[in-house]
Image (tube, rainbow, N blue to C red; front, side, top):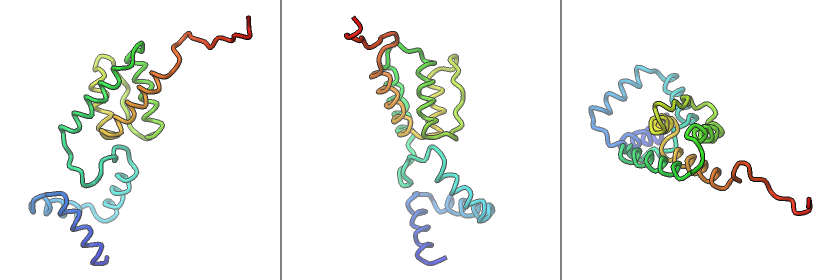
Length: 155
């Protein structure tokens, strides 16, 4: 490995803001994993859902909670649709982009908030907001059920 690559890795560690103790623990854990497992985990993280957050962004619980609240508010603007139907459309939207995402089935007893919290853990807060907005826009701009386009020539 070149010195340049080592320096880049060290800069990544500096950017985490971790203490020396935590860095030692992480390095020790990575050594125990071995190179193959580390490479597999890096590939999994690169390819998997929920990686919408930049590497240098701090993981803020407040930001995540704010994103969840915004997603709920966005989805609640959709009228005349059941929560189950809304979830079905959101499920399809997420699965289109993240087909391998292990989304749980929606259980109405547990509620919208709990289900969205699980989805957010898998795809990340910004992706949750993105899909909530897509679903809202799709449902708001669709023709209401039972309405058909009138053919004036059919008179």
